Length: 111
Length: 113
Image 1 (cartoon, rainbow over the protein chains, first blue to last red):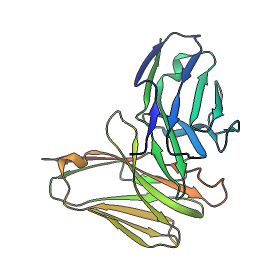
Image 2 (image 1 turned 30 degrees about the vertical axis):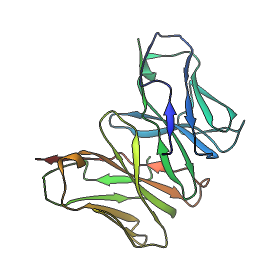
Image 3 (image 1 turned 180 degrees about the vertical axis):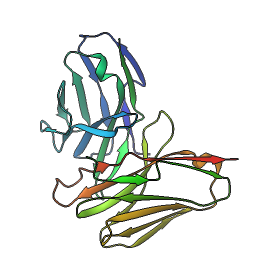
């Protein structure tokens, strides 16, 4: 069964901390994505990557960075966590025919 | 703004009834996908329909696509309590990088036993 695994289901961090959200896929997909999901705002794309060491900004990249050193791993970094980054974070990967496989999500609370 | 918009925002039906959700989008697409999300979980891919297809079936799911109206519908027949979830459409637009889909805000479906 193909999988996208997010390292944590729930995370509580303090304001100002550097936060790492990890995502690993076992499908050899080139394309990986990070979204955040907030009530009433739907899914918003933060960053995506089409290849190792390659990244592109999505719709809301401010306050975030990403790293893709290996094909299977795509990390989202909150450089200095703030309370407005409290959200559900969803990682996804895709290959042909372009249906997404999502991880279970990480619910991050910044206090 | 989001490329896809689902309608209605919320739908409540009895078990055994059919549920229909609609999705409208704004630009030309390569394909359109439907996903389900159970509360607090990630999204699960249900079905993908390409721009040159008009209808697709998968079990109790039926998806239609009308590119002239830029709209799609998802029909769940003989609904079950376990179908209670949020349903999202996503579009892979022609003028964007292939594989980068844009999601709507979703329809929340409640199926009462």
